[in-house]
Image (cartoon, rainbow, N blue to C red):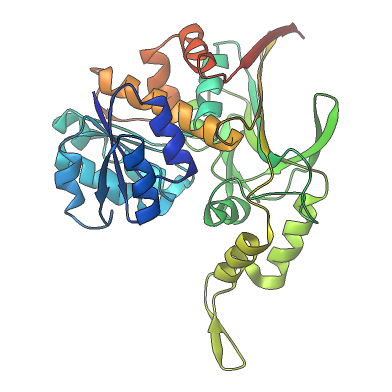
Length: 364
């Protein structure tokens, strides 16, 4: 099988690591990234992903994996259709994912699979929610966070993925299920305490994590939600920044200069938050019905950051599964992946890359 990875940053590099026994191509416009990819033995392409010329490169591969920012994914999915090659991405924006899924019939016709949301959350967390679901299940709660192992600065945070994507999670409406129906709640609300390994954290609503799950499980569940895990105090400080106007997309004029507040926040976060300190990922998916079923992952930085590992390895595994599958179309992860692999095999595949997900079943 041949896989084409768009973007060779931290996550793209980790995806390539998982797929190293296959033929792998890398598309990037950064010369240093391409030099690194070439040293690893990958085919390299210095290409702009927004140009139609990328389609000819896609045609040479069985599956394209987008490891670039979410805003390109719908257009890239349409390019994959023209190239007649399978496509998956890391998701992160409900509106764009909905557009990708609208390509279902065309993808079936071209005999390819389009699978958005293949990272950590959305991604791994949503697949675990699907495995946790059963007919008597009434509630599913997902709690996920990428954090520094040691709190950094006032926000107690470090940059673990795109600052643009992070801000998107903090400002977009959040899709949940309540009373068996889809509802929308405000981000940065629903603040609660949560413990991992007896250490106290906080969790609050952010967008994108549930992604397609509310549509998939509406009327099947009484309740479903997703909250991001952070060190205590983070949520209120982010609220303060956004209340000061940093969530605004429109440019404003200050002393005769046009300034885009959200772009300024991206710049400030990128400049002032650490990229270097070691990170960790905390994940807990809890499903309740007649019994309580819990999946839990606590992962620390190793050869790659914990965020890169827990995002890239599930994405790479999904790319293999859809390439091998005869089921075609544009589908959510929670619908397709359980049809392609059992829960036991899925967890074993990730365990081979030292992604250890513990499962616990409790009486209620």
